[in-house]
Length: 153
Image (cartoon, rainbow, N blue to C red; front, side, top):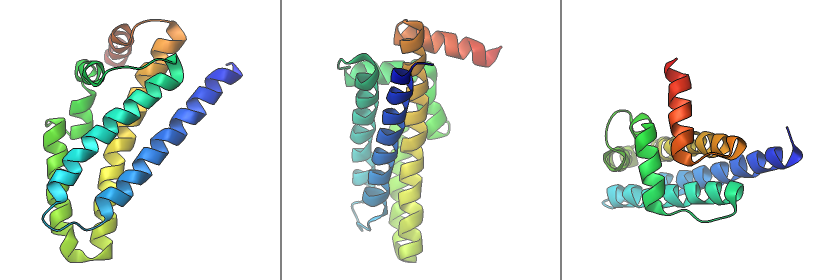
């Protein structure tokens, strides 16, 4: 494996860790009455993370629409959301955060970890698709198709 591939992967993993850590802070800080909107807003940061990953590999920008289309085709949004819609899952995280506010610091940490876990999982799935597409020199759609065929075999 070339050094440039390892460099791309290392940088990408660090970016995923950064975004996840940011979600710990944003998701963990108590915001009574504003938890659900703040967790829905984290969707935007997840999309930025995916765009940063794509840009690291391909040195070009990708639209949020393209990211959502690829993630939807890959079934990743369902996997990360546990079978529900992605926005619904983020709303549920906000609702959980609202409840955990009553448990003090332990609840705040749990809320932050929940937010970070979803972002990390999404980032790792997205990185897998982008890395595959880059290595095989195929489109993201072709990468999703190939990965899903391997997974079902």
